[in-house]
Amino acid sequence: MNFSNNGMNLLKRLEGCVKSGDKHIIYDDKTAQPVGTKKPLPDGATIGYGHLIKSGEDFRKGIDEARATELLRHDIVAAERAVRKYVCVPITQNQYDALVIFAYNLGDANFANSTVVKYINDPQFHSDKYPTLKSAWMAWNKSSGREIVGLTRRRIQEWELFNG
Image (cartoon, rainbow, N blue to C red; front, side, top):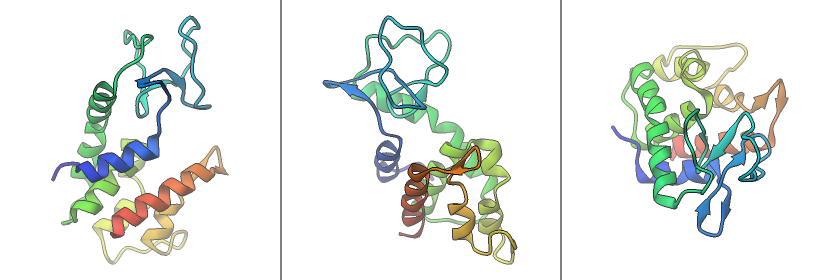
């Protein structure tokens, strides 16, 4: 199974981007504010749809939509690999897409060890803390122990795709 265009379109909406005209520009991932071209890049400097800029990458002139999509496709490879590795039961295309988006946001280790994966792989699994797959999924809406409204919205949209 491969990540679908439907999944890609949802991921783009969820990740968001910062543009000037038709060019994607560098922004601070924490604040979503553009980073000036003459300023040093902050930790979490990002471009396109959530691509964290790595040492040696230079995007100060901005990038076009095709390049932003190419970076995203490259970045989701690890999430696709995680879903293929840790989900051991048959799933639908929508479920695959939702899980890739979820894994992309959580990272490989968090995804692999999540109650979500346990519920999906074992219909007999039960958690007292998260009594349903949905509650386990929705629990990933916090940062530093605080609920983040944007993460709650994201989890809802992922969940709707998973079930639709």
